Image: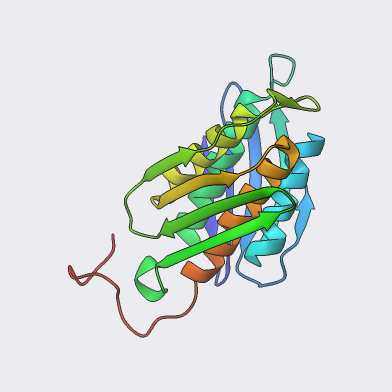
Length: 199
């Protein structure tokens, strides 16, 4: 089951499967706040970071997942729902389209570059030094962004230039991508495509 409700500057998505039930609202309010959450501590920390640095308002009012199995389905499906909301909220024909940042966090340095192209592609060139951060598997960072990219129809490159601490690496990725998206969502007076339209 998938329900999408859009208003002037918000999009709410409810998605329900046999594995998860998630309701998420995304708003272009430029306040950078996470309301609610997933009750997965480190994942909520990452989503809160994403909201803060992108300037987007994110509300997760419902999160049910088969966490007794593992965290994979809940994290991946949050990426799916966020991607659907993002694609339905923003018109890629009316924004700057491209964004890029290189962000440091102590010993860590992350590059990200985004194209709101209407085509989904993820290049995730990151290796973590630990398999888990608390109870959060680090491999789920890539799974989250793959789900987000596939459902928002964007191109995203993420590359670790430096980094040893897995917490720093994960957090720096979310900061960098959020800032790149904020740049790409900036205003534009033209459609940045030789085709004349981004679909």
